[in-house]
Length: 317
Image (cartoon, rainbow, N blue to C red; front, side):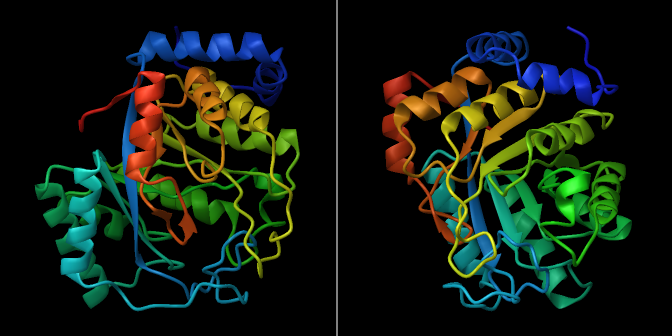
């Protein structure tokens, strides 16, 4: 099967719109051609600096522009971060992701602190991924030198819909960070959110942008919007699981080698719904009691789910 980076939007839309069972079958077949069947990577996300972000992302309770239940806090201490990372590893995670509610990191003491922490988590035996906002090329290189494995910077949605969700930065700002990350030799992690009021063409447009990068992102997190009271998207209605199944299968077909991560919005979804997502091509989840500031299935719940479905937790690379 040829790996392509020249997808036309019409081609991806045709895949997305294909009969659901046919789409699931094609996604599953593509998945098995490139990945071991029934293996799923468990990731754990730690919000090391929460709230007070200057960006105005309409979905985010950490934005300083909105009044939500999230209170801004200072940077976690090293001992606390390492304790949470070890807890994640003990729960079966092989990838530890660190997040800060920043527009971009500033060079200085806090960035230097995070570089040290990255090295210590790597020494625990984990893949380390970070999401600190927009990066310069030099910052990306320093993260690589510190032992970072991958960097997350989501596109969120299509280029056309982006300004309806965020106005404090541009789509090109996002792309520049992905380029800096890739140039530094870090693995690129980038995906988006569905359920923000976007059209199907917007979903397809986001996938096209990712699938036409060369190489493809090695990691593509796909999120259900989790509406939070106080944000402009706080009253959005939840989507049926079929929308995510279509996104996962389509992403799997156009980016067959990527890790497709079923990310936010799993809590409250039936085991049957999550099983369809795995069948369609998802091979990673985030486990642990919180996903940044929102509730998330804990390690024990996911262990029971894996036992039910016969899924084997993936080992660290």
